[in-house]
Length: 354
Ligand SMILES: [Zn+2]
Ligand SMILES: [Zn+2]
Image (tube, rainbow, N blue to C red; front, side):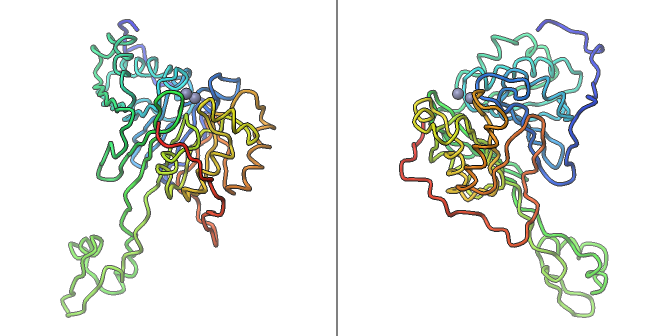
């Protein structure tokens, strides 16, 4: 992309942006949910994750990501990290236009991109001028194909990664928020006569205090239980594999590819993909709460997708069909008597690694 006049750029506010579940914790917005080829309703793989603090992360970025991002109602300016699974064009071909667009902004912005070896070269080949002259700082973190482990350890969350099993090196990612302190019960504290000030801070940090009249107050007297952080796993493209189970362990939301229906297991394995049944088995074996299925082959229309998902619910009961631009909160709403279904067996022949 050539030089530009940034003053000509203005924030567009799409009239049909989805209603975003701000205030309910982190959520994801699938931007593309089709496999290999877009359809009129399903774009190529890309998923936004919006954090509670407003930061936005992007997993993959197939062709069309820039436009879908604009339609999502989230701001390019908040994009902070990009995670790329593998170097098939339908998973990264839309990143160049998106990043070049961000380079046109006036605001300093830092973006860290994690992905396979060679991806930095692709960026400089396509949009080197934009990157060199922009006010943004773009850092590339290329990962060896067999690397597994934590790639980000921040105050509030970690991101880890593990190899998956595809026809070329591919990896999945796990975003895990650290637990937050429980809610401070102000009314109870008032009733106990706890003064405003450092005493309340101590209790919130888990320390006991002694009041001037000699009474001891324990943190649990006024602070609720620790609040769990949201866990999201993103696994594509992949056969059913141990890496995906590992990343999805105890996740609240697992976004996993489901290219084929349950009858095409052999074809899926040959092409390095999963059926909806495979995805459901991974979710069940990992004890993931909800499976967000996506990356559907274009051979299936909406009715066929609904049908195959319905059948797979025998393996894992909570499966949500991902739809382009439809936000999905990571933490499920509490359900009475809710338990994670772990009844289904994933089978003994999991593909390991790459
Ligand atoms: Zn692929
Ligand atoms: Zn794919």
